[in-house]
Each structure stands twice: as C-alpha cells, then as structure tokens.
Image (cartoon, rainbow, N blue to C red; front, top):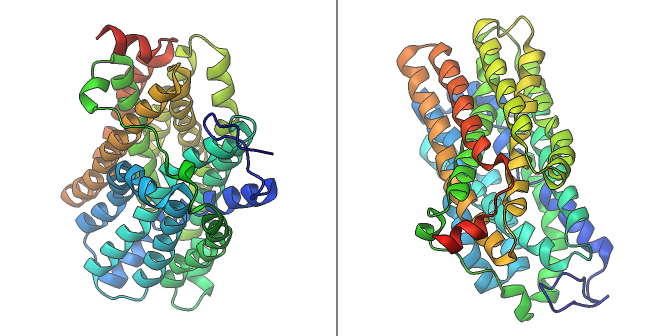
Length: 408
C-alpha cells in the first residue's frame, strides 16, 4: 500500500497494518488509567500525603486543565518532532510522571509529576486522531473505533483494579497508581519503532493550521458545541475524581466504589459504537440530546437522595449520560464539510472545552470543604446537566459551521 498523497491516509510500505493496529491499541488504553485510577484511591492519597480537600480538588482538575492547555500546544510539538515522535514523547512523559510521583512524600512534587503524566496523555489525545487520519486506509473509521474503545477500556480498567491493588500490592495506593507506568512502557515500544522509521518524513510533520479563536466565536454552532463538549467533559472528570469518594462517604467500600466507576466508564463503549452512527444518519438529534440530559439529571438526583440504596442505577444513568462525549466528538465532523474547518473546529472545541472542564473538579473540592458534605455539589452537577442539554439542542439539528463562518 502506498501513501495516497491526499491527507496521507494510506499505510506506507515501511509500516504494516498490524504494527499500526498494535500501536493504536496500546496507546489508547494508556491515555486514561493515570487519571481514572486516582478517584478510587483519593482518600488514601489524601491521608498518605496530608493533602487537603482543596488540593485534592486541584488534583482532580488537572486532567481537564492539561488536556486543554497542553493539547493546544501539541500541534506545535508535532510540527517539530512529527506526529509519531510527539506521541512517543507523550508516552515517555506518562511513564516518567507515573513512576516518579509514587516515590515522593511531598504533595507539591506529587502534583507536579501528575501534571507531567497528564501532559503526556494530552499530547496523545490530540496527535493520535491526526496520526490515524494520515495512516488509515478507510478514512480512519476502523482505527478511530478501536481508539475510542481503547480509551474507554483503559479508563474502566484504571478504576476497576485500584481496590485489589491497594489491598494486596506492596505499598498500597502507591503501587495501585504506579503500576500503569508498566503498561505505558509496553506501549512506547511500537511507537519508538515507527518514530525511527518516520522521523525524516516531511508528511509526518504536517498539521492543519489552527483557527483564530475570534473566528470560531462568530459561529453559534461552534460556540454551542464548545459548551456542550466542555460541560460533559467537566462532569466526566468530576466523576473520575470525586464519584468514588461520594460513594465511599455514603458507606460503600473502596472496591464497590471503584467497580461502580468502572461500570460507569465501561458503558462508554456502547455509546462509542452507537452515537457516531446515529449522528451520521440523523438530521436532528434533539431526542438523543434530551434523553442523555435527563439521564444525567436523574443520575445526580438519585445520588443526592439515596446514594447507597441503588448505587448501580445512578452509576448506569450517569454512564449513559456520558455518551455525550462520543456524540460531541462525532458532531465536530458531522457539523462541518471542509476537512480544514473540521480541524479548526476540533482545535477550538477540545482545548477550550477541556479548560472549562478543569473548573468543575476544583470547585467540587472547594465546595465540599466549605459545606462538609456532598448535597450542594450534586445539586449543582444536576443543574449543569440542564446547561449541557440546552447547548446540545443548539447543535442537534444539522447546521454546518462552514456556512456560519462564511457569512460572519
């Protein structure tokens, strides 16, 4: 197979399809465990490091902040090192950050090294889809499906295995967090091989130009999509960081709390398969936006009124509501025509949305410390579901951002 010369989507003779597939699988499952493994072990981390609830809020806010800020810089990194080299460097940052943070007793060093690991994940978030677009033979559909499922699986596994590792591994929570550096070490091998082969390829350094933020804000659909993506991402990272603690404070064990988060995250596999197909085939997704919004609000209300009575039901409702993530990602392509506009909208929606997402976990820590409970937090999260639904309805009908930008 040869490079098709238009977007570079063919796999070149120097790279086999098996190598590309392996690389996508191993990188995708390593872009979430470093973040999702923190929530179930949050109480142990706080006690082990003497971390306040406010600082714990800062830590749970770091994924969204890093994915936004560092993700915006990843394009420049790819222009210098290439897509493949940038992804390999991101994996090295994940390994270094995850290994070193469990060796320190300092809260601030722990947070700094968490930042390093998350920065590596942020680079992968941005560059892996671009790498897939360049190398896939089918336009990226199959590899993007594998990539999305790998992200979901990695997130679920990261939270599911925390409790057993805390109970049985030496050093408890430190081993439960540090073990994910080993899986990232496996992942870096195929990317190092591919990077060595591609480092002198000019096409590996080409990235779409970034649109000026002011231009994007002239499109109502782009702004609404940014809010829709940002609110759902905020809720996702609040859930990763704080939901297990909410369950634990309601009387559930660390194992039960981790399993509930794993179930919530695992439901994303179904959404990852359904939402892109539904959005591609439907001209009006208002019904789905409303349904997912109702699931979010009901999940939080249940968590507020009876968190320990049917905890699996609230986790399931919030997990289904989480299908807004693949929905929002699919709308980036469904609401644009020109590939350049698609890249520009993605470069606007994801970094800005993730910065919005960083605010939520931080505020949760502050509000919890001020109130000493979870009622105010959960009610505010339920209200955020209303905001998300309102923004989603503005992008539910098929409107092309290209047209709005041309008429602005």
